[in-house]
Image (cartoon, rainbow, N blue to C red):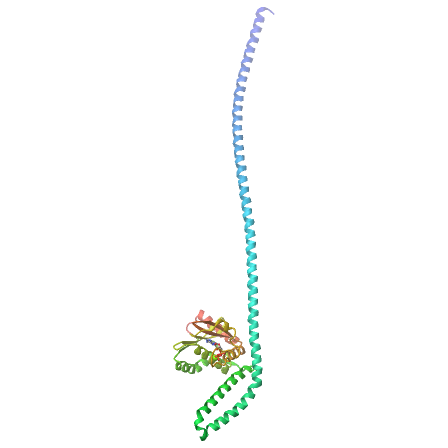
Length: 353
Ligand code: ADP
Ligand code: MG
């Protein structure tokens, strides 16, 4: 090859090298640009990573906080459960105590009732045994007193004879009352209106009340017929009203009421008297228990017996302002149906009939 050819060849190579160089420089530039971009992206990623870490840390803290709260709530819940259990236990204890109390009370009431029945039984047997034996000679003595008192020679002693006769009558009345306590056979009862019996007796009690300068009222309620023994109920009413009147000062008011309450017919006799001392309440109904100078202590004993033979119940409410005797009679099945119908009518009145 000649020199010119060699120069040409050299120039050609030089141009190629320059081009290659430029290419390389361009590529280098591009790489640098890419690198810079990569660095920026990387920085961004690092930043994002950092943010995520921060968020994660925050989440961890929040999580821990939540876990703590949950723990606290769990603790509180456990405490509540324990308190709840404690309360349930205390309730149970109280319930048990109440049940015991009720059983104890029932037992005491039952014992008191049995004791009263025992006393009544004993008195009854005694009365039945000696009542007639005493009455017969008394009748003879009374007859002779009447006979002698009517004679001329004893005319000056007439008041003494009369007094002896009235004392014998009083003794006889006590024995009669006593004998009624002894009666064990079931007395005859028939369906009748308690208000009718009260109505018949009322003028008598009213007259008694007015002579003592006291007041009386009778409020008959709507009540069904009851299975009653008329004589016994009359006796019951007389005994209770007499006691009420005897307990009151002048101008005191006696109130007699009849009404239906809680499926029972109630006869309530309320006075404005002195009341019954708590220690005496338990003794009521015991034969011969009296706080009166001339009392027999047989009135309430008879009442308890009559009430029992009618399957009824006596409740007493007494204070220093007065005493109320509540006698609750069971309503016979046939009458209770009528009460049901009446009460339904009261709720849904049937018009036009
Ligand atoms: P008596 O009337 O003969 O004393 P009771 O058996 O009728 O006998 O009564 C017994 C006792 O009960 C009375 O002595 C009295 O102490 C008391 N009592 C009964 N009813 C009443 C009343 N309504 N108010 C106050 N005390 C009463
Ligand atoms: Mg009496």
